Image (cartoon, rainbow, N blue to C red; front, side, top):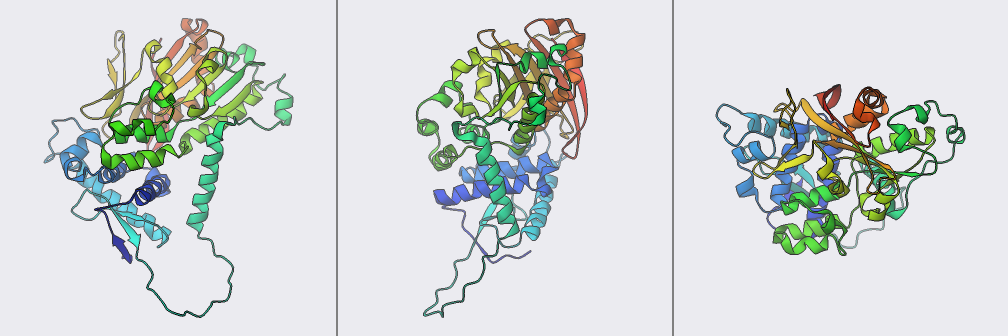
Length: 427
C-alpha cells in the first residue's frame, strides 16, 4: 500500500521519538502481531536500535539473530535464515496492519525491502491556503482506531492507579465471603494469600521499567527505582541519543494487557475467597508493606523490581545473559534428571515459569511470585494457580506445609497461546 508520507529518520525530535514508541506499542498489541512473539521481538528490536542511533551496528543479520531471536553466538546465517524469514513476515504483518488502519497512523512504521532498519513515515504537512471560506460546522467523526487507542489509554491509566489501590466493588459474592465457593481454610495456597483482615497486594508489571532497562543496556536496581527523581536520575549513565526516550517513558505509568487481565481475574477471585485484595502499581508500594501484607507479583524482576528482595531465596531465579541479552531460569541446585538452565526454545513454542510461595519479610504474611521468562509464561503460571492445579500440587508435596515452596513449569504454546502446562521440578 502506498502512503503519502514523508520519511524523516535522521534527526527525530523527542516528541517524535515518543510518538514512535506509542505507535510501536499499538502495533505490537494488534491482532496482526500478538500471535507471533518472534515478529514482535524483531520489530521491537529494530525500532529501538533505530531510536538509539545504533542501526548500523545493531541491525546486522547475525546481531539480530543473537540478540532478538535467541540464536547462539556461533550460528551460521547461511544455513539458518530465521532473520530473513522473520523480516519478510514482519513486512507482511505491517502491511496488513496499516491496510486495516488506513492513513490515520502518525507515524506509520515500515520495514523497507532489503533492510532490517525500521523507518517511520510522517504525514506530509497540508499545503498553505489563503482566505479559505469558513466551513460549516460538522459533527466530529471519530476514527475507530483512535477511539480504540483512547479506550486502551483509559484502561492503562486506571490500572496505573496513581497511588490509589483498586479494590473490587462490594457485591453479593463479596458479601457472602464468609461462605466462599471454595473454602480458603482447606486450600494450602489461598488460605495463606486471601485471609480476612490482611490486605493482599496484586502487583501488575511496570512496562516502562522494562523498556528503560533496555535503553540503558543494563539492569536497574530496586534502590535506583526508588531513588528520588527516577528515572531522570539515570540519565547521566544513558547514551545521549537514549536520554529523551527515557525521560519520556519516565512520565508514563503503563502495564501490559496480559498483566492487567491476570490482575483483574485475581482481584475477583480473591474477593470471592473472602480476602481483601487490591491492585497495585510497583512504583506506589512502600517497602514497609512487605513486613505486614500479602503480595502476588505478576511478572519477573524485569518488570517488578521488588522481586529483588526475594531473589536470593529462589532456587530458579531469572538470569540475564549479557552476551546475548537473553533471559533464562537458572537452577541453583540441580537434582538428578534436572537441567542447570531452563531456556525458551528456538521456535518459541516452549517456555518456562517459576512459581514461588514465600513468607514476607517479617514472616507475617505470604508472597506469591509468578516469575516467567516472558509474559506468556507468567500468564500460564497465573492460570496454573487459579485453576486449582497449584493448590493440588502444594497439597501433595511435603514442602507445602513449610513456609516456602517453589514449582517450575514448562509452558508449551501454539501461535502465542498456551496449549499445555507441565510441572518440571519442585522444591
